[in-house]
Amino acid sequence: MTTRVQHALEQLKFNGVRITPQRHAILTYLMENMGHPTADEIYRALSPQFPSMSVATVYNNLKMLIEAGMIHELTYGDNSSRFDANVSEHYHIICEKCGKIEDFHHPYLEEVERAAAESTGFTVKGHRLEVYGVCEGCRK
Image 1: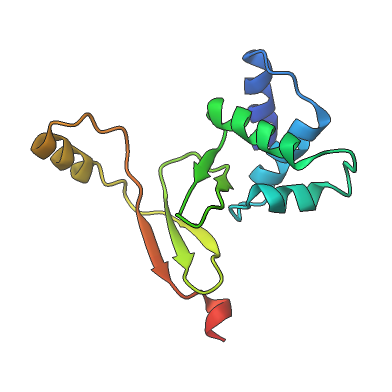
Image 2: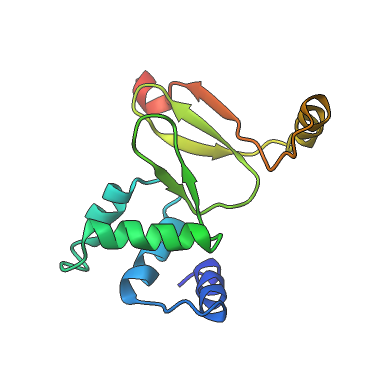
């Protein structure tokens, strides 16, 4: 088990969250497969290991992990949320053909947040930057 997963499990236990085998598997899957999967993709990947697990179990655990700050939910208007275990400040590039999402790192745009707050009077809580294009696999 990776140190990152161990640390996340320790955080959850410290906060009084019971670590079920399904919860452990979902968190491990997300942290080891940084491909921004949907709940259905997580369910399909883990159902052979947990035949009695339902899609509802996956959704309930994802909701709990979001509330615990362990993962982020990504919505892009196509009615299918994707989940990201990288909770650091980063951005995404999305393939317009296949929907693949990859992380990319760029200096955080704090100046944009500051300008938005100053010009609107809003209290800014964050921002999201998405870059769209066609991935290498779809170009071939």
